[in-house]
Image (cartoon, rainbow, N blue to C red; front, side):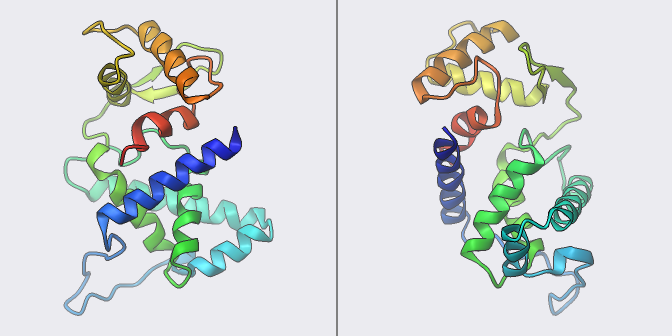
Length: 202
């Protein structure tokens, strides 16, 4: 099951890079395009990978914290954006970043994060969307806008017929989708499930 999850992440990552092209370029901060990168975000991808492989938990915590700070700043300054990350948890984001860094070891950690965020741009949460507790044992919380996205994808795949499905309807549809995909999720919007449903086609 873990191999299936990693396969989904790899497929999403590779296709995103293919379609977006040189998505690691940044907007120029001055006339010659240079700008200062603060903190651990200036580390190279190869350095990040070395620390990850060595199991340096403190370093992983620092990279994750820097990433979350960068995401918050990006949310503030990107137009028509409430949250660029519609459902991914930090650990999932770091898996994406790791795949990028393996492909581009000489790039800075910043550019890996920026690349992932740009690949999310089309499906970002644009408005201040309230968090909804999804029915299930895990009581996972998702943006209302993300739940609408989930419902739309399930409708397009024929798992939902009701034009105004309830959360329970969506959960039942997720069970069917998970069975089709070989995912053990019990109808809950797990990371593996949402990547398969929402990111796989990118």
